[in-house]
Image 1 (tube, helix red, strand yellow):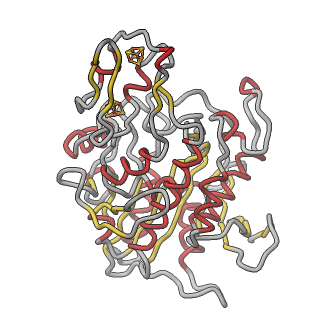
Image 2 (spheres, rainbow, N blue to C red):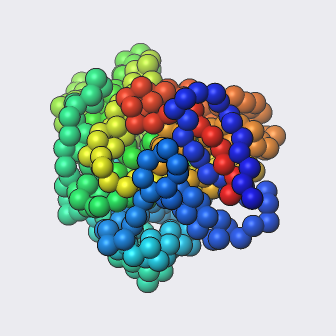
Length: 377
Ligand code: SF4
Ligand code: SF4
């Protein structure tokens, strides 16, 4: 039997279905129930979703090499089986990274790392591809926003008939929480679109803190940073804003703009809205998995100690509603005491930002509603 809990009042309220890990239900059956509920016709709430004869992109972050808290391959497999059972033709997909460290910057490396982490055709039961192949820049561009000059959706995702976005919910150093909106914005776009979003936070050089050690120039894989008279000089037209130089500076001489996190989150929301625009008219389903919630994202290896007890899995057709519910559920979960943080917005506090910035902006851009009704399945 379903129970419903209204978290907010309002007319445009989206359904968010919730499989609660605190119960003893079978998780695979739970995923089926989430998808059944999310795709069926609801009176007065538009059409149902039919995966039949559709090429369905099953988008998941396959995890950085050495990260051990990313999405479970078994969950992806079960979604693949569900889509196949409905007559769909699924493929599992992810995109290349902007940052050159790690092992996912090229398509070849990405596929090798995916296989290492358990995401293979044999294991998932469907082809595994990198959506911005062959070079990380292959995509479909759409209109600009106020922060980003363009959005470019990875080709294989843009050309799919439908998409199921599986997001492991965790923290992120720039966005507080990382969920469905982030997976759309960063996970479904090309390398140059990722750069465009990171450009929003900028890079700031503090001359007085610089010792002239040259480490930043030495680590820049793109050779856009050189030492001139003992100080680093950037060619920002060619900079990828990957922050490798920033993270390598032990003197704290490289930072981001004062409002960099806010600008980044707004640019990210614009990018998510661009992806939704390209996918307009196509079936889109979002699944948020709230387990192994770390302070950092799945690009980090490791991503830090766990923040809260495992919560459960959510499903919705609304990326804004599902991320809103994820923030609220994490805030109401049992926090591991060593973190010393209290709600609201636990992950935002840990990452010294406000997670709601990108969620509010995504709502303002019209891709969903923060008002939701939580329906337990
Ligand atoms: S790593 Fe930091 S301290 Fe060293 S040269 Fe670069 S900015 Fe200066
Ligand atoms: S200058 Fe820094 S941020 Fe720019 S590409 Fe090089 S390492 Fe990345």
